[in-house]
Image 1 (tube, rainbow, N blue to C red):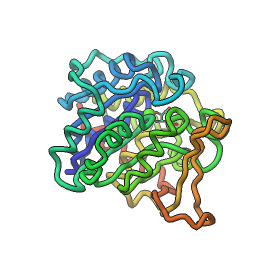
Image 2: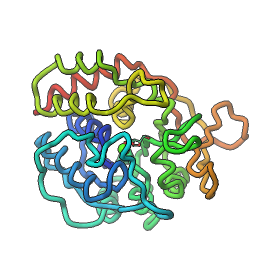
Image 3: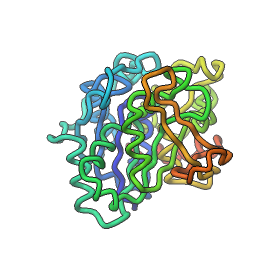
Image 4: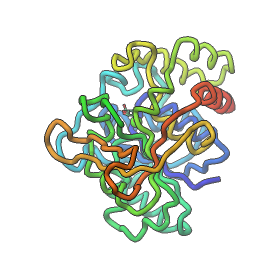
Length: 307
Ligand code: BDR
Ligand code: CA
């Protein structure tokens, strides 16, 4: 199984992504680090612990950045609610593991073999960037970096930028230039993973486990996406996990990507050179299309194996 570190900000879709990762024998999730994002850090931390507890997992959960490197913290309460889980109550999880996310990440990397660790980032990139920026030599331990971030077109936080990229573009830039393979799961891809009432019903029919039920309760509670015309809501973060489990559900293309770090309206915009216009060498893999039915089937089958 791949040695994996998940950096998250739960977050409705983060919770589901964590359960999918815990259910996957392909992944050995050795550390969960948490940032503020979908709610404030105290809340995302409590949510991460609850998600770990509900799955009966014993992975350490370590607190990280309360806010981005620059600028003020803003929680994305419109989608995830004030509690980050759209009002779905979970029992309290195991205690937090003492320490700081960036230190815990570096610790894992230091003890790992070259090119052996997968960094899965489903929040603003602050924790992962701090870890690599403070000891760049450890980047050689990283096999790959998979990030739910960015957008080819319209953003979901500002007109120009996706939430995770908009929160901390400087940290995203650090990861893009870390010299390790980066895969971007952008809004263009996650818009294809649309949660609909039919899909929730199909998932519910798969079992009675508490994680699967909580996943469906969360899906029921998230409002449909205005951006996508109310047909459902995109299940962003689990797409990044699914890429690690079933790449055949996706098509991908290597691209040059630049993230805008200025202070204007384009802050956090990801310029994805899909057709090679810039002449710049590719620095990321861009996931283009998703077999959505296959994705929801994978999600259901895997979550049905959890408690
Ligand atoms: C990203 O922002 C958060 O709302 C989600 O958890 C996801 O990581 C989508 O823009
Ligand atoms: Ca997230």
